[in-house]
Image (cartoon, one colour):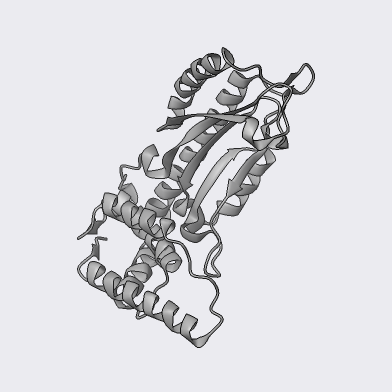
Length: 275
């Protein structure tokens, strides 16, 4: 076995999952059909094993709220809400995942189908004519009926842990079995980032996805993992311009994309991928 194939990069769960929240929705009894009567309680968590502790804190917050409010509840359907997705337990657990490895080995579509088969919602980003930009996905439980709250929490936790492990395995496969695919995706992205003359915010977000993967592996010089993640987060927060309707609109968009390309060319001029 070659040295390349025996290489074991330090893939970690927090390279894949950016944490998330666990949310509980409750409506006041007698007024269950008004938005203003809905209470939302939220607790954050870092990695999937933290979810049960976050739910314990959420339970305590719910008990404090229940001391002052009578919740709308039905013996057959559970907690009631004007929003069907908040009925039953009214519990949603969501997280954000970076699934570049599964994309590169070609397993992203079946994994998404598997998540939807177990009643999870998978939402990517579609922008600038691109689909699933950056291969960053928000995942949460679509079903809030049929299971007690703690069982639902444990079920979602197991799904999230399995998804993290599938992505880590995909990244290991890239390094051990398909290094040229990984190298090609990173080198193509670097070439565009160094030399593009026009670059839209969401195109930059997409190009940074394989760069983030390489940074997680410690295979980049000239930029840190934290800076790549920060750059992606900054692009995700920028509002997109509306579709151009006039020549002036086109010029405004081109000027924005030119300025972003210039800044990006300068930042990545000395970033290198180490084979």
